[in-house]
Length: 131
View 1 (tube, helix red, strand yellow):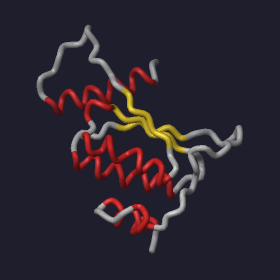
View 2 (cartoon, helix red, strand yellow):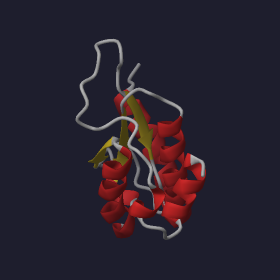
View 3 (cartoon, helix red, strand yellow):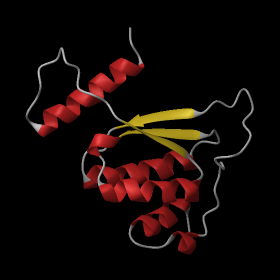
């Protein structure tokens, strides 16, 4: 069974012990100076995107030997995902961080949820990577 098949089984209701997947990069492993952590910033806005995010996480871990850290905007994650992600991180050996982002006071408030999510994606990157 491929790692992809195991991940799909696990995400669709199989237990972690059913997968027999070995952690590729343990969270507490020592890292060489030239083996930098891969940081992935994401906004998952709904159950469908959270499901796709789980698939992306497994895919990233399958295709890199470097340590990986995922960054999530807390405001848009479901309580179920917030409860699930620590178990997945332990199973697959990655780090994660939940961040909160406050709407800038100088920017007009948006009322449509999808526009707010799009704005958060852009603003989040702008804060992380300013010109």
